[in-house]
Amino acid sequence: MKIIFLVILCVSVFAQNKVSVNQSKAGCGPVAAKKQMKNNKIMIKEGEKNVLGTALQIAGKSPLTGFYRDGFCSTGDLDAGVHVVAAVVTDKFLQYSKSLGNDLITPYPAYGFSGLKAGDKWCLCAVRWKEAYEAGVAPSVILEATHAKALEFVTIEQLRNVEKK
Image 1 (cartoon, rainbow, N blue to C red):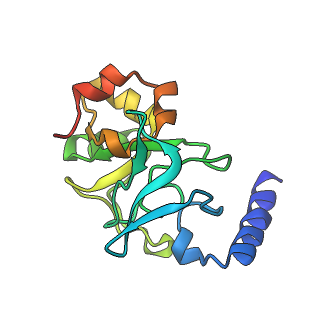
Image 2 (image 1 turned 135 degrees about the vertical axis):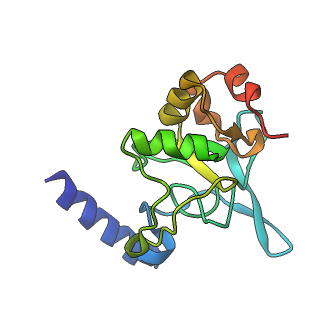
Image 3 (image 1 turned 90 degrees about the vertical axis):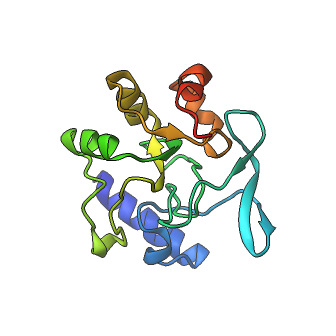
């Protein structure tokens, strides 16, 4: 029943916001925050903060990341996984994630997902990042692009321990 409701909700959101399945890919829902442009590139989201308390910056466009597939580690009511940690993935992390049943390596063209490789920037679930941190395989993070919501799951010290410099 939940699946049917979510499908209907997604179709409704796509229709109302003229968002195609290819644009959304892994989630549905409008991007509510106003975006700042720089040289025709979206760089920050007004109204959303990062773990440093400043405007949330873009995490990555290639591959296109974020629950809303807009390049930002934003979250919302439909994001049950809370994809808010902006990480630069490593082979070690990708293998760890795959061993836990979350295969981020294998491409899934039907969903517009080309698979990740070491060095890609990706918005990770806060809980999965914490598990990886505790297992000693957490990828580095981009603090400016990691959503403040991450601090409900991990500490700023944990994030700083693996900060991408």
